[in-house]
Image (cartoon, rainbow, N blue to C red):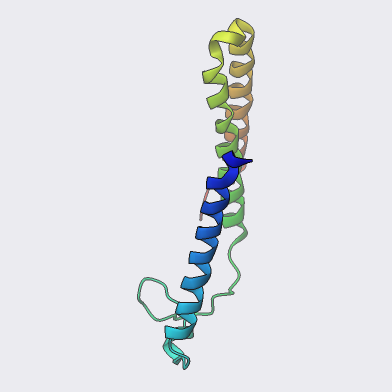
Length: 117
């Protein structure tokens, strides 16, 4: 159990320091807030419009396509790391995977999902 003593001490000091900083902030900060404090901050410009307006559905389609293709390309990294272990079979599988991915991309492009206007 003596091996865990530094970890326990570290957690104790970190949590104590965190609590001290929170209580010091509560004592020092101003209690009366102004209207400017509660306004939305975007690039230093005052808000001109409501922030809960409806967006075009194409925005969400493009965002979802980005997430889908981005997550799919993440699968390339473990394949590249383990390439020497999986050999020719892994290469053929990855080529097939990329072909399906490219077909999906061209299908979305053909349907006009990537067109903004």
